[in-house]
Image 1 (cartoon, rainbow, N blue to C red):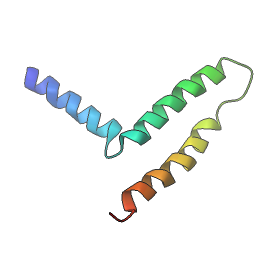
Image 2: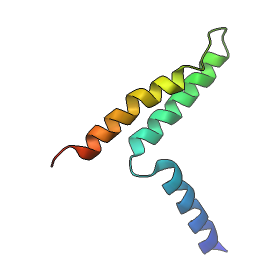
Image 3: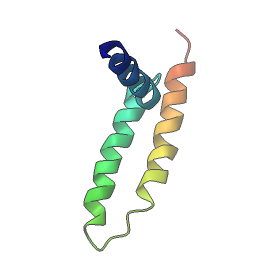
Image 4: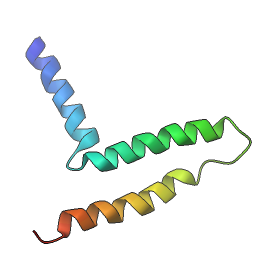
Length: 67
């Protein structure tokens, strides 16, 4: 039973974090920011697409740079 729980946890860690923990951390932080902004009268739907537009190229740049 413990081995199955460990495998389940490892799957979700690999699925969410994947190859770049910075992307997962950035999205998690922005989800918290979106939640906070959604409690106000300011529309917050546009924050996550902006996050993806910023974080994805940075992740690709880090993954493809030589060295």
